[in-house]
Length: 142
Image (tube, rainbow, N blue to C red; front, side, top):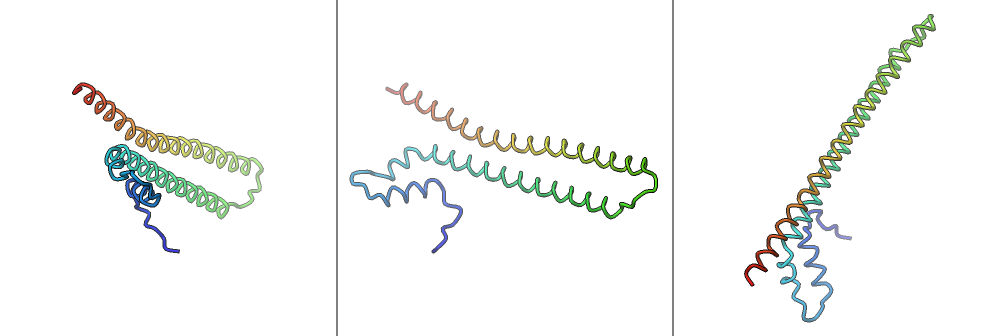
């Protein structure tokens, strides 16, 4: 099975879909031209979402690697102290550091997700504004 390139645009996909349907008396190209800006905005929004998801996953992977490295370092440096208070102090310090790191990482992940979503939505919001202006100018001409 031949793999299609990942970079098919919405315009290419809709055009191929319309041609594959082979409907009589339907000018798929005219329909696509009419909605080109809308489809381009959807495509741009989808790419922004995908890029945001990719950076989010990458950052989460880095966070996990850092956490595993810290745990490995702690395990290697661990030696059973003779004093139970010293053991308790080490465990408490590790728990505190783990909790603080988890909170910081959760905040960072939430911010990355918010920015990614906001960018994607802003692209669509701008296109909606443009479309409304196009509609208004069309009515003003009549």
